[in-house]
Length: 56
Image (tube, rainbow, N blue to C red; front, side, top):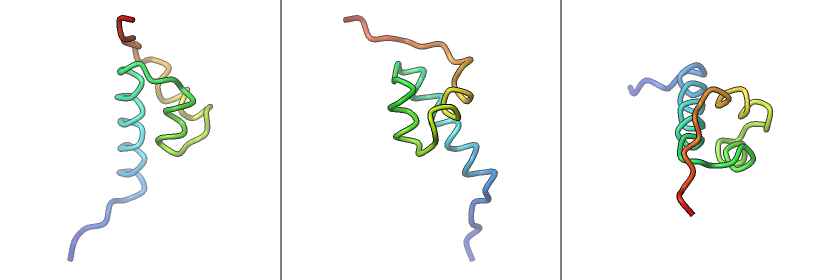
């Protein structure tokens, strides 16, 4: 029988996904929408991540 991911596993995966998106230069609003959390949670998860903007 396969082992189901726990809440903690899902939480850490969402947080990692948010941090990767932010490092790619995505906005907080788009991260919150993509990951499925509120804007404040997304901000809390990624506030320490450096943003790499595309050269435009």
